[in-house]
Image (cartoon, rainbow, N blue to C red; front, side, top):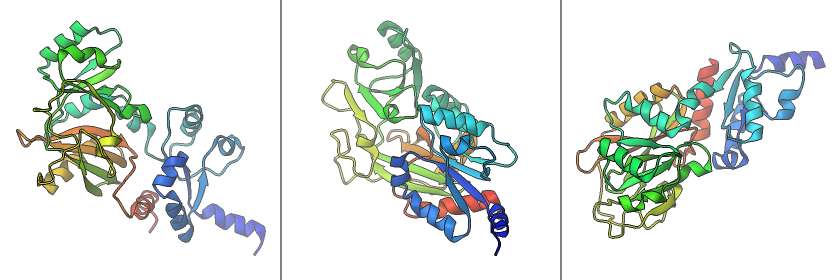
Length: 314
């Protein structure tokens, strides 16, 4: 077979480009996805500055990415924005991701569409807000202690650095700018919903922060969210009562997930849901794009199926 014919056949094969940080690549076992693509004769290429800087590059029909707030990611974003819109599917679109990168804007959008779920009351605290101003905002929004202090940026490792504030005297402990949000007792159980495309939801139950209404200390507690919500979490804040169980309605959780997913227009998204122990309300407390999918055993297969669907390949 001639070299030109081989090249012609290769050009006809779909091409998927990807950019993932090394840690993300390893955690997702993304190599399994690449092997599956190879098995089904779909070409893949790792996107980097060198590749995109070449002239006459082969443009991917689909791009999978988890871009971060660093120099390389910013360069890649600008390069990807220049690709022809009609010929490349971006998984997921930057305009959609931008809706949840600012935690206050994310919660505000969630709050605008409450139906099956609630969003715990929250306020935005700027660098200019002093303790008295913050206390007044909390009172006006009927937010009572304890409260969660969350970074305003909802992406990057520091976005997971949280604090629990128990009283007015410790408001000086917050790191501004931030979002302050009502803490809701939820019997120390969190439901992580992982979406891989439309109507494909995986619900994973995790331990979470214990009920704090009778917590003995008033000192501010600082923690990384993975310390209280990952499968290996082991923290003083975690619930220690193994007898506590929560039954939840799968149909309601699926409807909430679909509503939130449509709101942000994302294919790869994680949604954190808790159940208020006092009211029974389902509360959405965070939304993340392209999460870690910890507990989803066949992620690579389902990601491949999603790509096939988006590329209209049978």
